[in-house]
Length: 496
Image 1 (cartoon, helix red, strand yellow):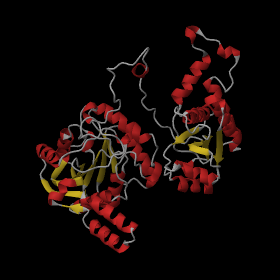
Image 2 (tube, helix red, strand yellow):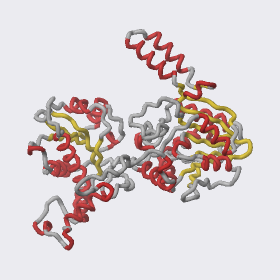
Image 3 (cartoon, helix red, strand yellow):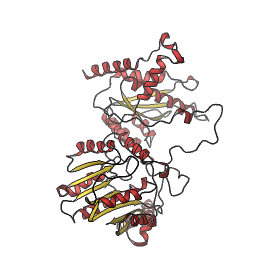
Image 4 (cartoon, helix red, strand yellow):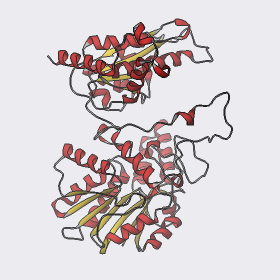
């Protein structure tokens, strides 16, 4: 019954688009201005397509999958070789095996009713300098995604696969077939916002390239971002994976809830809250709500209110929906920035007894206005815990640094504008905002990297006892004071 209903919905979706997969001679005739009805429908299809990461637990009819693959096979290939091969996977046990062997960690690999593994025989093109096999497969995957959208299905190309050969091994593919990834297919259970797309005049030129065109488009340096741009980016970034995707939302925060940095921070906040009876707590730029959720677990019924402050109503709605899925929301109040082009926390002076700010100052070229707002709403006798990413630490970035050395693409490039601070810089800003530093610490000092390398080498040569002793020694020195603090990954300031 579900299959029949979904098939009818799919047909209705095509009708709304104004065209199916077949084009008649009438459709080919241009209308006024040289734009055909089919062209308009195709552009509408492209503009409405979104990557789906949350799927309903309902099967996809086999005939729809066959139509998707048919659409892919109608697209051009190099020398018309047509050497693709597609495998539809619906068995949950096989999905688990695929995830394990391919080292793919996205939850939608399990949640999608169907996984389409895309293979191509590259044995005839091993020395091709034009990489036509890769181009051909990319065209086919694009066809799968558009065909899914045309039939009312949701789909996403799964590119985060660290070992594609594992997929071929799990599916028993012959060695001449190379796997180029997976396409997750199912009935959409989310409504992600439209991402920003670069305008055509910015990417199209005629009869040559302009040498004056800037090299970088999405620059990571905060001084090139207005507050409105940052707010819009954060709002769309948060929603594009849905509520609580992956159980971690690592696309918006640098550390998972199980990381030592996060655990230290929440433990320290618990000690701060124990000094007050029924405190009011403010979490600055809550984003995915991880810190707020941990504050609820730490404070329990002791807290009067936990304020989750961020820049847009969309982020507030995200936290509310996410908490509704995780647990009863408790005493959480989501508050939104009161100014369109300036930072303004909508709370009266001296209203909260504790503030948490978890690596959020990095998103601003000048975080002083935010720090002053935090100082304004902090009550006399209250404390704030501020964590900042240290510029002097040798962060291992996966992406190239930008033009200025103190700006870099972070561990997850999706986080938006980001900069690092020197200890003297952040301490001067805290003083200018009116804070007094009561304690300064460093987390994960640089020598822990050296200790990890030594322990790894010891294990490789069979010296497991010595490796354990080195690891134990390093584990006891995750938190440091004094000079080593300046060469730690994260700077921690408890201020009043």
